Image (tube, rainbow, N blue to C red; front, side, top):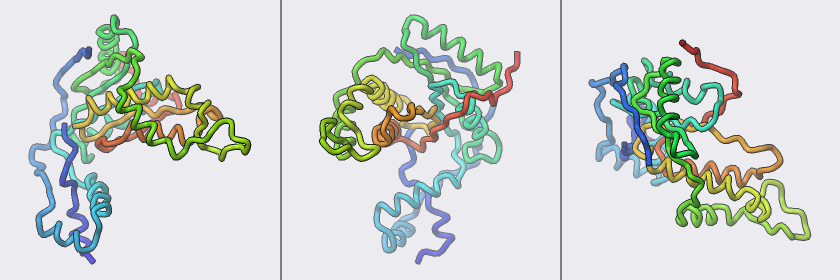
Length: 257
């Protein structure tokens, strides 16, 4: 068995790589210049391969990535709903001292369905963050025009949910939590919105070190568990570490006028 100290040395061999108006400013917190990149040696890999299969090695690698500081990191915050500010507070705290992302720059994203007022919304959001004393590097307002998602995303989603779909006209009642055809039709727009969101996450945040997304909360009794988890799976698939956050609309930020 591999000794404990070798397990502690496991880190990711493949770290996550790095119509939109952008506002930029310098972050007042600087990253740790002395932190060096840590990678597995060839000997480490040989020893690991003797005891673990590739999937297990990947899990060990992912678990240990949070034990080492990231130099000049990036945290992307997708603030999609008003949750009292928790989606902003947590990533802000992660940029402070003794965090593995100490000194990381914050990039704030939000969506807008009206392209004509994107610049105005962006200025307002930047001003709001300044009043909360949230040091940010960029603010981006992404246009969400309600278009149909890419066909690749739709096909991938259909393949994902196929094992969990049941016929609405079945004589026997379907098992609780499975997806009925009528439910898919009723929630098609929400599904498309989720798939567009997944495409935006891949486009803008695939190279960040951490992604924080406001967690969409389904209406009880209207969304099956399988459909909801399929939405979450599509949003977070093939992304860097992603934190889903949902507050209770109670303010957790102090407003400075």
